[in-house]
Length: 318
Image 1: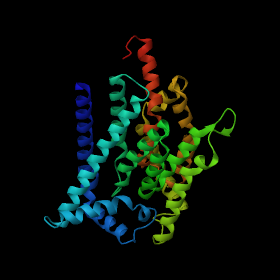
Image 2: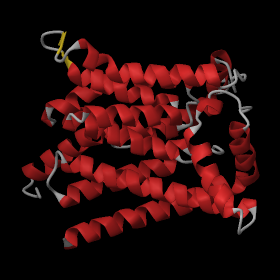
Image 3: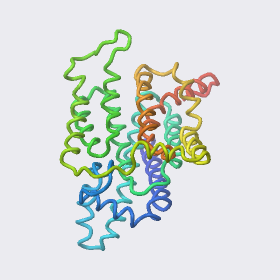
Image 4: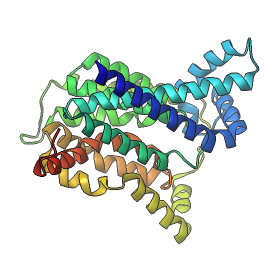
């Protein structure tokens, strides 16, 4: 019981520190722009793909609307989003701790994994304005991976539904389910085709409905414009590659070395890697490693498997 309170206190502290750092270094300097973007989504006039990321703006607006009856609108906006960021970071860290507990018993190993992720998040949470979906995206992604591992099918479908309303990268969750359901040794689906395709169907229905019922606003940048931005200068390209390297840090080495010690579930998750990086290369701004945060927590156990192996070899396990 004492361990649980200590862990919860540590996770709360880390979430509050990261939320404080994020708000004053990222959100506060572009606060007015965040208010404008929030309201553009509510009016269905924001550029794509932001216009279809409706879950956070509409949920927070409900709370802001209640608060502004007693305090000014901008104060209500600040309070709502500060609390939203802190709560979602805490929820993500709690889910990550639980997820790591499925594979590791060592308290120190699990805490080390979370702090490892936090260090990477400091690199990721920079150089943008109004991207609140990135925080709850982590919660949905970790919940989805846990539901896949626990074979909680209905909960998984509900998770995918809300995750798709939040961001189109919810696609990673049904793809992971398909990867886990596929028998790579016999090249066949383990379950019936309806159950196998269910998560993809839920994602597709919500994604298409957003396309149909939301306005067809112009994209922020075309694929060609994104590529030109990512490659327009050598200095910019080097900085982007450095940001990616710092984001993954020692996991670049620990993950491949830990692969052979990992369980089958985490090994199969690695099949998502080419999908993540192809989509990131084509649709992403290469300096914005924030979009890789779900992938980082997915590969974290492999890095920890290698650390655990080193600990065992040196008599430091547990």
